Length: 396
Image (cartoon, rainbow, N blue to C red; front, side):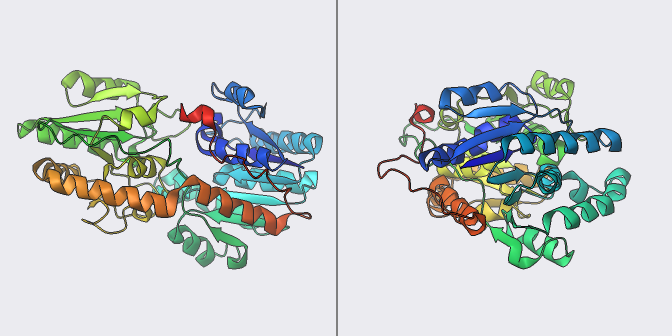
């Protein structure tokens, strides 16, 4: 039995779906990872997993190029003959579902993790593309032996209201999951008070609230507060709203924040900070940085918007909500935590418990396998009794 997992970056597959692939291997399934070329793809080999590249441009809107991409994808699927195709993100879901019909793939799962730029932006280009993408989604996602996995109820309601996907084909799985053994709270240090350390970890696009984060840093610095702001992530050239490197470097030069770029060892970084901030006004699925921060016992500060409120459900209980597009609101929330370290600890403890109850990747993988089971002609082979869900190599 062979499954193909298809995403628009190898980075996503490696960081968010490797554990699922390893679990499939334990069940005797051959997982094949498919994405455009990238630096993370070769890492699959050390886990005994094949990786295939697809020449796909995330930012392209050229109809000829895009139709060629779908044809190329169909050719790959005909060659691989998978029993199931699992697509991630809106563009891959649409292209994968269309190519799967041509290649006669018997089962398709489409994971729509947030509705993305076309549905969240009010730019003229986004408004122009929205009806086209909606028509493609309606055609591609709502047919055949398929399911659509969504990460939050707001997206499920939106797709149902727009009649893009029949409700009986939708399944809700909150997040891609977090390894709660790898991401865990550090030993508590109740010694001398130190500066509050705040992290934003995300792709550097404006809808993630990156400029508001830099603005809050400037406000608190102007108040004379000793709060350290850390920014982890890289610009995203495939996104029209990426934050350019020069702007981030200027913030760092001004002393607002420290830019870390891409971070390989996130658990180690999270052990050094107190707060995970994500002032996003993007239509998120469930943000990975928030659930990693929650599992690590950090206080969470985010907006009360779709996806983010799946993690911080109750303001003042399992995190703090701030107004979107509002650096002053973010600065006020961080000042509150700086002044009240007992609240900081309570919110971090509550976030950890919520991660264990709702976002542990073992729960997410089990639910994903259940969705696979709804579509397969034969059940998955049984996994060995002692097979581990987590990859020991990633726990080191």
